[in-house]
Image 1 (cartoon, rainbow, N blue to C red):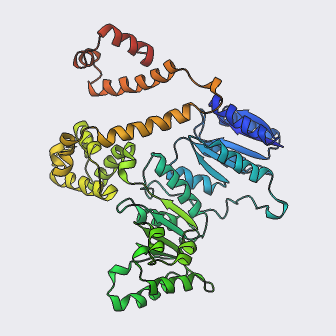
Image 2 (cartoon, rainbow, N blue to C red; image 1 turned 90 degrees about the vertical axis):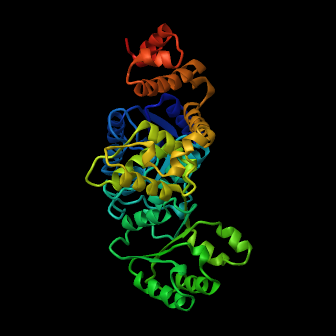
Length: 445
């Protein structure tokens, strides 16, 4: 048996090769997309490990060509930059699974074992591209996030799009649970049917049962979204549980919850059987304070959406205020803040004074706080990725420090209008030292 590893990072390719050998399987490495395609065309492989970020082409293009082979092998996607579009496209093209860096090599080994050494009675067919859901178009893809928590959520959302299993979407209010449900429906086999949303507190007490029954009936050919399912009364929960256990045709069920359903079960206010019926797939959406690396991109996108027909950019000082705010209302609060900025800013650049007072004041009251926590989280994730594989393949300390310093200098130069003399003066740096670092790290004379 042979496994093809298409990965341009030498250390990670070596680590994956070690994992493959542990299963008594022969690994073969290709460092580019074209090389991987040519190897797969010349000989048969039992499985392919494929990185999306390749030097010559996107791994998704490679996946498309691998799936066109006469006997396409199962493909496991690995990526450092998980996005909703990549996850959906990988599923549409027939990828068997989708793993995010930094990789958990134990999980990779378990997935390889299941695919390469499956029990004879449990062999599953390779997913077909003909029945997989279509990927979102750029206009539809409004979920944004590079933070690890969002990448994990995107991977499960992609799995949900390729399935009809019930899905529980959890997370604090304002994190985008309803939006994620819309994405799942739009990219599922039920997309031709209606997405029917039901929320119990929108109905008077005496009308809720009939409203739920009407929603169930209307969604039989499509998807039923129960919002804040933890607020359903026990009688309504019983109706829903009976529906899910009934005869087809049944609606595809999606449910959102801001609180912990397991705590409600312990308190006797939520049915345990209903929980297991609906939580087949679980999408956990993190609060915005745990994905601060996404805030600048999100804010710019939401500002553009709040000002259709005109250009509205965010000044660096404005972004600093935005990053210093804790965002207890999550993405919903950020969207409202960008609408506020668009309403009060008559020019093309939103300044701190155009933000709501609570956000503009954040830079004065907490300029570090959760930003330091976010920096630590991102740095840990980056180090986990760099220190993958055997210790003798790890970069040395000076190499790691040079990479961090390079990014910092590049950012500082932008802030000081690409003028090293101003940068050296403002930060009390030795000019000769700065020139040497710019030459060594950024290739500038």
